[in-house]
Length: 158
Length: 392
Image 1 (cartoon, one colour):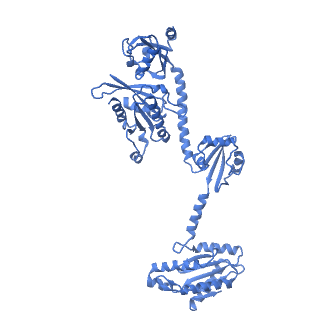
Image 2 (cartoon, chains in turn red, brown):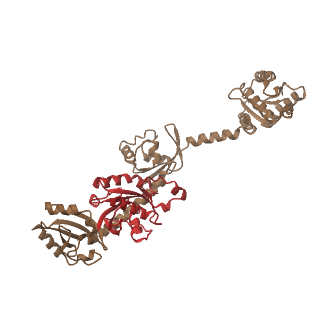
Image 3 (tube, helix red, strand yellow):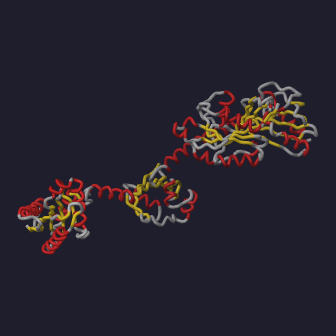
C-alpha cells in the first residue's frame, strides 16, 4: 500500500472541508463551521495496479491574523490550493499559499480549485478565466470535485 | 531517565496523555490502555502505526531523525481524532524505539474554536461591509476623537493614499490634508453636522455631511458635485438649444428678455424673417430649406457679440436681443447684416433677402408688449416691399 499525504490549503471559508466531505462522503452541509487545527481523512484510490491511499489533510484556513503552521505542511506529496471564486481577496492569496507549500515541499504537486461556482451566474461561469491545472468547483453541487482529486493523484502517482 | 519520566507522567495523568511505542519499521510495540479512544478501531501490537495514525504519513523522515539524533522532538498540534483534539508528540525512547505521546487538548481547543468561529464570522461580515463601502461613489471617512478610524477606497484614491495605515499616519501630523478648510475633524463635524455643506478641496467642489455614529464615531460623506454641475450645465444647454440651427430656443430667449426687463435694462429686440422662404421649401424641398436656415443662422451669428442673444422663434423667424440702449447703432448694424444677406449666395438656392422689425424697450415694458411692437415693425417691412429694416 502506497500512502501519500495531500493538503487542502487556502483562506478561511473557501470550502476546503466541504470539498473533502463531497469527495469522501458525497455529502454537503451549507452551515459554516470553522476548522481548527487539522482533520485527516483517508481515501483508497487504485492507480492502475497499484493500491494507493490518499491521506487528506483538512488544514484550518489562513486568516489575516494567522497563517498556516509549517508543521502541517511537512512531508506532503501534493496540495489542493483553494479559493472562493466569489471573493477576490482569496484568489489574490492563492499565490502566497502556493509559495508556502512549495517552500516546504519543493517537489510537491498542486492543483488549484476556484470553489463555490454554484454562486456564479451562468454568464460569469461561462467566462471564468481558468488556467491549466485549475478547476472551477462546487462542493455544493459536486461539480469537478472528483476531477480535482483524481488529477492531483495522477500527478503524484505517475 | 527523561523518557521514563514522560511515560510516568502520562500514566499518572491518563485523561491527558496516552502513549504508543513504535520501532524503526513503524510497528507498534507497546501502548497505553485508553489510546484506542482516539482511533476508529482497537489498537493491536505489531500493526503499522500509520494505520491508526495516518498523520504519521509524511513524517517518516522525522521519526528516523528522532531515532538517530536522540534529542530531536516533533510536535503536531491540534489534530482532530475521533471527536477529540490532540497534540501528537514524537520523542526519543531508545535507539530502536520512538515514543508517541498523544496529548488530549480537547477542552482548550473547543474554547479556541468558539473564538475562531466568532472571529472568522466577524471577518466575513467586515469584508462584506468593506466591499459595500468601497463600492460607494462618495468619499467616506470615519473618525473617533479626532482620529481617523476608517476611510473607503474612493477616499484613499482621491488623496493618493496607499492604505489605511498611511492615512492614520497623517493623523499624527495633525491631518496634513491641507486642502480642508478646517483644522480638525471635530471642527469639520461642527461645520457639517446639521446639513450638507459645500467644501472646496483643490479644484473640486464637494458636499460634505457629517453624521454621528453611536456616541464617538463621526461619519463624513463627501459627494463630489463638480462633475454633476458640469453634466447639469451640459443638459441645460441641450434643452435651451434649437436642434436644427444650434441657436437658443424662444423659451430661453423669453426668459432672458424678461430678466432684462425686470432689472429695467434698456434692450433692443429684433425680429428677422427670411423673405419668401415658402418658395425655397416648395422649389428645392425641405432639406434645402433646413440647409438655408442653418447657413442663415451661422451668417448672422458671426456678426453678433458674445452677449447678444440670438434665437430661433420657429420656421424662418429669428430673434436677436441686444443689451444696448443706443438704438441707432443697432439699426446701423442690422442694416449691415441685411445688406450682407442680400449679397450672399446661399448654397443650392442662391440669393435671398431678409426683413427686420426693431423695437427698443421703454419704461414698464413687458415681454409681450415689446414683442408686439417689433412684430408690428416686421409686418410693416413685409407688407412694404420686404428686404428692409423697420423700427417701431
